[in-house]
Length: 95
Image (cartoon, rainbow, N blue to C red; front, side, top):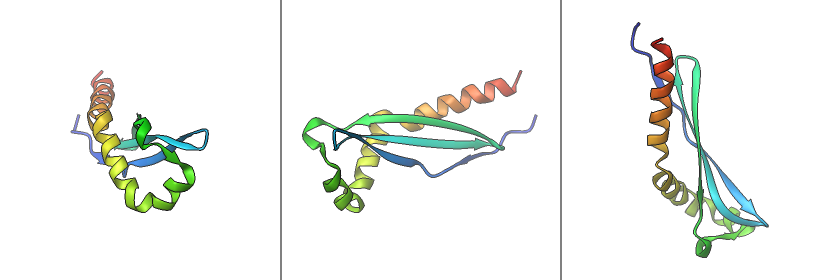
């Protein structure tokens, strides 16, 4: 079997709100192996002292959003989680 081609899609981020406050970041990271998607979802809980109301986050999203996503990706180690899911998927192809 030829080596599969893996393509990484852009990570999607969605805010997690609780009672009108931003309390976390949910990330969706998808790799495609041929036409099959392998998606990893991880949620990072924002430290309580950094939680903010939805209106404040939306107003400042362009300035603080990328830094929050970077912190969330590092804290959850989403790239490693995705790698493990890809390895598990590839192992099913060998059988």
